[in-house]
Length: 133
View 1 (spheres, helix red, strand yellow):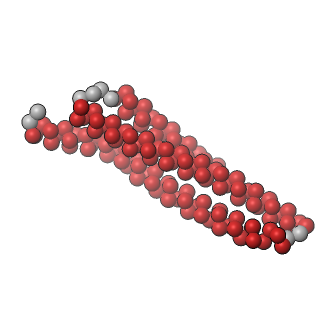
View 2 (cartoon, one colour; view 1 turned 90 degrees about the vertical axis):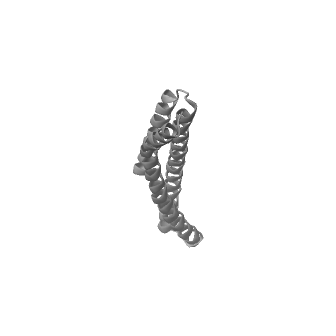
View 3 (cartoon, one colour; view 1 turned 90 degrees about the horizontal axis):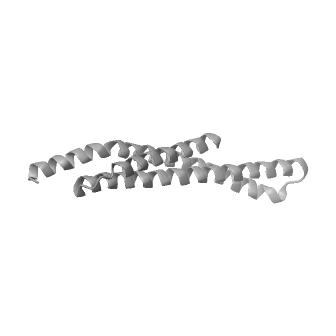
């Protein structure tokens, strides 16, 4: 291969990897939002835990119910974060597959397609969990 052909192959591979990189940016933004929400829930839980020993009767029941709801929200947000991080990892693997295919000549198109589909499913799972939260 000539130097111009190598540069052309590199440029084409970079163009192919732009879409997954945008997906990676979106996933990072989602992670930022999820971390912020998790932080708020944790802060609220700490306030409730400080009040919990001092409460009695109906107020105690309300604090306990709110703590249970906060615990559920934390679990859902953590699962959403897990799915988003897994999506980001799969997107990085997808970009690596694209460059590996370009430079080795291996036919990795099917693997890249599956990686993209998996990344989209993980992003969908993360967004659905975010909606559930």
